Amino acid sequence: MADASLKRLGVEVIDLFYQHRVDPNVPIEDVAGALGELVKAGKVKYFGLSEAGPDTIRRAHAVHPVSAVQSEYSLWSRDPERSALPVCRELGIGFVPYSPLGRGFLAGGFKGQPDAADFRRFMPRFQGEALQKNLGLVETLTALAAEKGRTPAQLALAWLLSRGDDIAPIPGTTKIPRLEENVAAADIVLSPDDLAAIEAAVPETAVEGARYDERGLSMVNL
Image 1 (cartoon, rainbow, N blue to C red):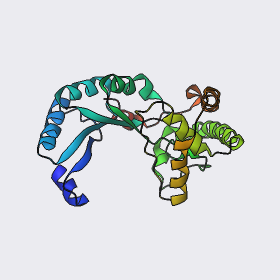
Image 2: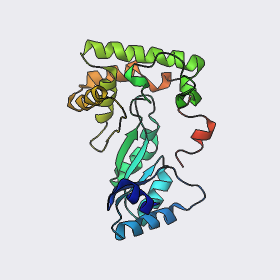
Image 3: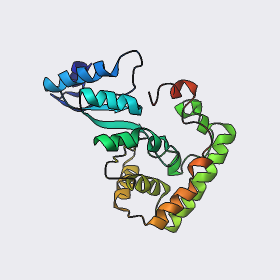
Image 4: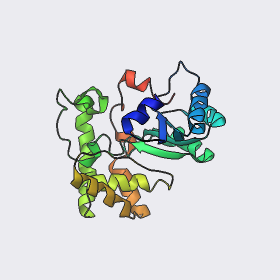
């Protein structure tokens, strides 16, 4: 797999090579050992895991240093605070939040039901009554952002960046203006009152619906 990736990318070494989902049928020690061999061979620089649980992170790190753990983390997905993030900080592992804007939802541009081509239609948070309740949270965040001359996406990203210097969110976009908007969030300094207001706008306990369906949840935090 690594050789194929090197060929597709047209590079001689992969900076960070992730196991993007933990395979319950393969001991994580074997995965870490194989990545260690790739590092020794000069094909990979660093080893990463995605959506791994605390025990898996510890076991992998004992075989070969884990440099980064990537998991969904945002204002409305705060599970890592109680699972992977404390272990990462104990072991000195960087944390990479994917979907830091709630799959675009926290950016405030999502208004109706996902269409047939939108994968989010399978996610409980984007369905029926849950969606309508969650839209109310984004409206509150959007109003708060407007008061501060910011966008809701910028506040959501600034909040995430405030969680620690070991946090490196990876918001996705296909538009240059959105990219510039997201980058500007790094310059926002939030006071304790600002942080409290943002968390009050999108309290974790008010978010309706799971982030994945049952099948998706069975593949995370393993």
